[in-house]
Amino acid sequence: MLPPVETDEEWDAVVPDETVMRPGAEALCARLGLAGAPLTRFPDGSQPVYAVGDEHVLKLFPGACAGDGEAEGRVLTHLQGRLPVPTPQVRGFGACENGWRYVLMSRLRGENLAEAWDRVPRSHLERLVTEIGETLAVLHSLDPDPLADVLGPGDWGTFVDRQAAGAVAQQRAERLPDAWLEQIPDFLASVSLPRAPRRSLLHTEVMRQHFLVDPDGWRLTGLFDFEPAMIGDRAYDFVGVGLFVTRADPALLARLTGAYGHTFDPSQLLAYTLLHVYSDLPWYLKELPVPAEETLPSLAQAWFGTE
Image (cartoon, rainbow, N blue to C red):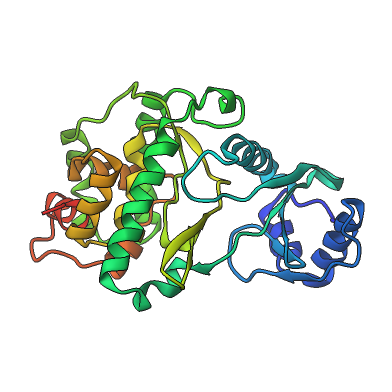
């Protein structure tokens, strides 16, 4: 049986401990008709996730984030067969003991794009980012209203205001140097962001790590991890694109946005980077090139420019 997990202390005591997690996962698999199937826990991810044999994946959500389990199950069901890239097929989702929720889904095939990236020839990378752009265009065209009861933030303008009010504190907590911190208020004030954009279904973490590819021909074979999905301005999804897919490569970003059908203002994308729920500018500054002129407008162009 999976014990209650409602606090950070309970999370730290329970979620990493396989002597606790595995018996609970095995019992749930038995209840779902998969008794005896071998379980292999994936090493990455914020939630406990298991391969169940060769065909299934079981993702578990403690009570502290049970709403994310409901959201992911609903989003994946909504997306079934609707994107150019495969997404996991939902086999079942719901509640289990002590506030936990689960999503049982099909296992996608392929190699993680983040691990494969350096081995992919440039011409194939160009095709892969084209496929990503086309996939995002379809995702953002879908009607998100059937998911409005499980996905936030509700009012986009209120969300932007709330994130802007806490932006400096969020980056200070991540130990961003003062020279960058001091620029944030004026930069955000200088960028016009829509308060009532066209409502789009957002993945919110469009990263190489969330795509799978077939090394035989280098084609996308999967997109996963819709746990943090939101409804809002489509530009918000291009934070992950610039930081974690094209990674300051203007030619690749131009190809991706060309396939998507729209190019975004780099300043808007950096503003959304600072407002993102999981924003960590010091980490990005270590991972990506920093322009000689250490200003936020220069950073916007370096990371999100297409020229």
